[in-house]
Picture 1 (cartoon, rainbow, N blue to C red):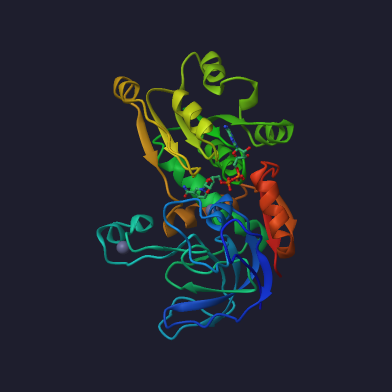
Picture 2: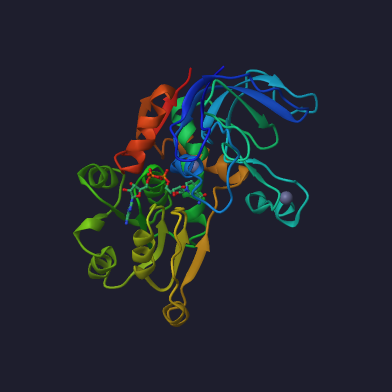
Length: 338
Ligand code: NAD
Ligand code: ZN
Ligand code: ZN
């Protein structure tokens, strides 16, 4: 099968002919039809984070397609089913977190396109217990970005503890952020989008943001405070930038919440005094559970969420990474593998 393979950190991926993976008793084999490109895939291929991925690696955790083989113990899925393989490849199923339906916090979880080969290939093996079915009304290209960008932004808003009518800022209107804007609007929140450039401004306003702030035109927190007279109830930061996080922190009102989603390989110093005095909540949010994913897919099936997609080919992956790193992608790139 054809796959894009990373062999060393910070080197170009190579398009290669590799063996179709064999499956175990709890697995399914998925013939990948479409694969979204998440900024996390670049962090993986660069070895940006303290926990390193396997090498060589087939990246990708927004791979969707059709099941072509089913392991002996799998009863709830069959050949021909349409599924997506999310970032959470597997979890133990027995720890406190798994039992509480918080499987993304399982200490023994493994990630797709990180610890296990992912969706930048014609076929991908998946743990049948952690794949999620795609509703009939969503085609493969539309479904792919929901398996990470969609569920992650949806979950980030859930943990922001906001309610309809509240103000939320979405800092970073990329693959995740432009979906966060839409989920926020669908949840009845008022949205301030923060990013840079005319394309992201137009997209944000078209998707229902009330305001767009260009972070290159001065500190966004100052502009937010002059717009609202105070800060936002919650900021969801998806920016791959420490400066973006610092500004998001500074833009939250007393009693508000900063949801940390983006994963720049830097640290953000947290001001203790301001956090205490202002009663600020900081929440880290990692992808979403299978239940979150089902909910997030249902929003899209109901026509409330539409990813701004540019369809490309697997062979273009190195150029795609380059464009994503430069912030030139408006929405999500999905590679057509059908
Ligand atoms: P993306 O490249 O599509 O979007 C990032 C956006 O941030 C770009 O539009 C860029 O212009 C913008 N940006 C950069 N600096 C900024 C600043 N100072 N202020 C505002 N915006 C700024 O990336 P993506 O695929 O949306 O992923 C974003 C980040 O989220 C990555 O670090 C990725 O690894 C991480 N991520 C986290 C999770 C999770 O579960 N927490 C899941 C998926 C991705
Ligand atoms: Zn992702
Ligand atoms: Zn567990």
